[in-house]
Amino acid sequence: MGRRYLTATEAESILGLTLNCLGRHEKALRQLRKSAEGNADHQRILLTLSFVNSQLGNLEVARTALTRATRSSDNLTIGEQGQEILGTLL
Image 1 (cartoon, helix red, strand yellow):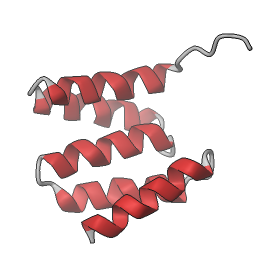
Image 2 (cartoon, one colour):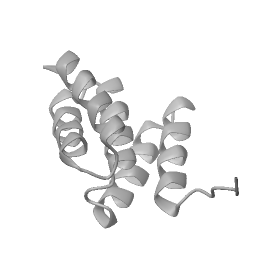
Image 3 (spheres, helix red, strand yellow):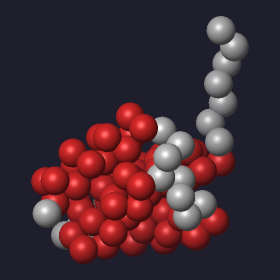
């Protein structure tokens, strides 16, 4: 099998998650929002945006991002996982 490289959006998602874990919450949200603007239906960025917002208590924003992620059709497994998480936020 050949190597699989991260897309820019996947790298931005990881960066946002890392910033959040380091306590740089506002910077993480700015990074994730910026990436989501250019990739409105990218599941990974939406799931990460939802996770960070839920960690910060922004549950309505988290639900909105998670709902968008589950409706995106590029990866059904991620969509199914998102649907499970969404159930816990309702």
